[in-house]
Every structure is written in C-alpha cells, then in structure tokens.
Image (cartoon, rainbow, N blue to C red; front, top):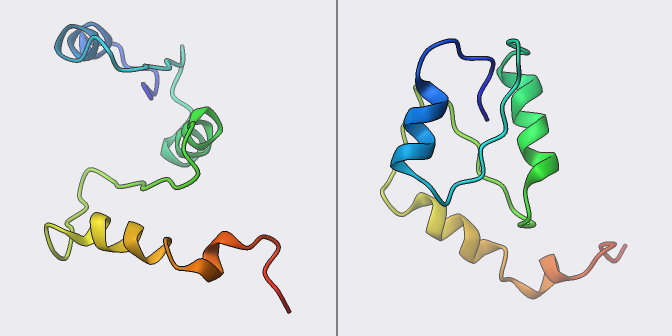
Amino acid sequence: MDDGSTDDTRAAVLRSFPAVGLHCSEKSLGYIVQRNRAAHFAKNPIIFSIDDDAVFSTPSVVENTLREFEHPRWAQWPFPS
C-alpha cells in the first residue's frame, strides 16, 4: 500500500519487486485506513500486519502462529457452542 507518497517510492517498489501488487492512493489516508484497504485486497485468509517499528519476539513467530491455525478447532466456522 502506498499512502500517497510524493517521492520515488512507487517506482522504487515496482523496480525492486516487479511481481508485487502495489495499491496507491493519490493522497495520504493514514495507516489504519491503508491497513484495512490491504486486508480487503488480500487473497489469503490470515493477514500479518506490522508497523515500521515492529519487532518480532522471535524469528519464527509468524511460522509458529500460523501453525496454531492448523488446529482442527480453527477449521470449524462458525465455532461450535
């Protein structure tokens, strides 16, 4: 998501990562709005959203969290009461 950047960010991203899907806003909408827009465009059922100052507690935290979703209870929707 490009939040209305006015520098060379868009071109740099597309140049460095040509296969990436980049959605651009003409003006800044703020990171919460852009995070919600990104969730709308996502094609996967699980989204990890991080900020520029985020630090993972371990290098494998994303992998470990995804493994938790493999539990049979998570596959049931709606959850049984």
